[in-house]
Picture 1 (cartoon, helix red, strand yellow):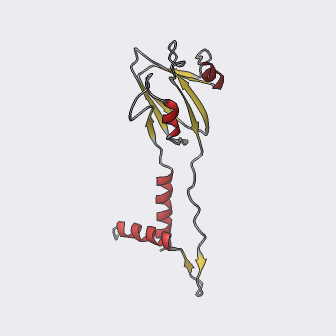
Picture 2: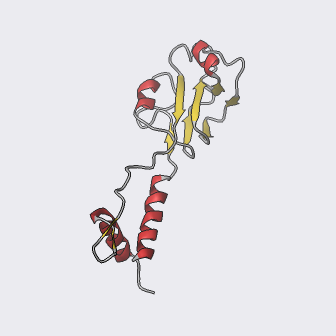
Length: 158
């Protein structure tokens, strides 16, 4: 039973820390001048390990990572990096704020910029500590029992 509890905990931890890949503007738009990026970002939570992909026409746009001052001024003059492939994947590796904009004249001023706040992954709700029965056995609680039962049912016997 202890092995099953450990396996259940590992399985839950893996699901909780799985990286997510986002296409900027999807599903209704892409990296373009028609998407409301403030609304798009507000509907998502970004964590270290996630990726964001900018998909766009190389002839019409680019992606420039800038600092806060560049973002606020819509200036790509002192950029952190620039992307021009039309399908740029950016890894979000650490907690913090990242700023991106289109460096073509007038595009950022028309709203083609995005602020991505990368936050630490939450550990989820804290489980109640196990209690001890009168006989000294640890009683795990119904939630752990259900997870353990489901996990054991999915494991074939060796």
